[in-house]
Amino acid sequence: MSRFTVSVLMATALLGVLLWIVLSMARDLARAPQEPLALPTEPAEDTFDSTLARIGTRAELATWLTARGYSAAALLDSRDAWLEQQGFPPGQRTAGLAGVAPAADDFNDLDGLDDADLLRLAANGNAGAFQALAEHSLQSDPLAALEWYEQAVVNGSIYAMLRLSDLLVTLSAPELENFVSDSAWQLALEKINSDSPAPRERALAWAIAAVTIGGYAIMDPSHAARIAGLGEQLEDTGIARACETANEYVLEIATARRMRGGVVIETQAPELALSIDEPDRAIPCSIPVLPLISLAQCNVEAFVGPGPRLMNAWICPR
Image (cartoon, rainbow, N blue to C red; front, side, top):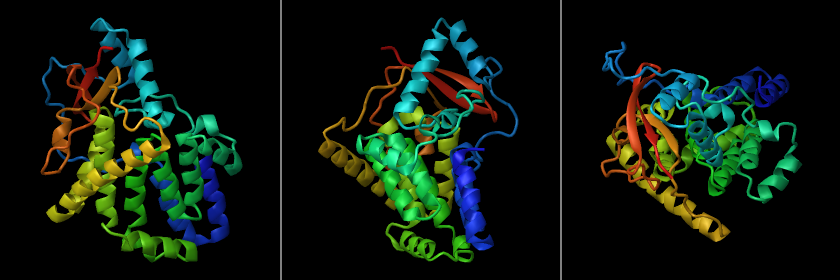
């Protein structure tokens, strides 16, 4: 059990049964990237080309890469390092495969630090510290949690964009209003639902902005399911607004990063990326989204991942 889950359970014991329901939903959301909305477009049975490799674990992926003459260990380590740079905690680097990341606390390198220590790290631009502060704040002040995640985005985290997407979905759920007894939560939920565009449109916008900045390297089955699920919940006009808002988010992020004096947008492709097949088709925008990290120069090979689902491995020479 992670530190975040324990803290939620302790808080709920004090806030009572009604608030416990709210916080439990927030706690469950912390695992959302690992438990995405179902993506209904895949076949129920493995009907893919029998010549394609079936890869379900990190070990199987390593064996497959080695058989093709690649240095599997170097590629996998490089991929883990790239995802870490983008703010993904160890438990969120799976890309639809079992065992791609070690079992570890989401914020393992920050475990045991209090908010004062995290604030000092955050002042130096540590995106992981912003993310940890966001999770700590979620129990008592969801608006603060959203703001901390936005700061993590400015400091280079793509994972924070996904968390913003998932949090907006959960915090805008109508069911929450029937169970909230805490005034801070009431005000927060009112603001989240009154802001424009609508929360689920903003959630889709963050999900699309993440692909714009991170490229198809983050278009794993979990993220494809996130986008598909949100798209199914919105009308065409809502999807169009979300696509426009995604572009606005990208520009705002670039402006904020420029003001900080750091790298505005990182365009170096990872040495190894895993994505769903035809990742561009998973984005519901009428105008194609052009990722700022291009995989056009990479070697691409198809395989069948868990699900089963057709996936691509992109090997990008340096």
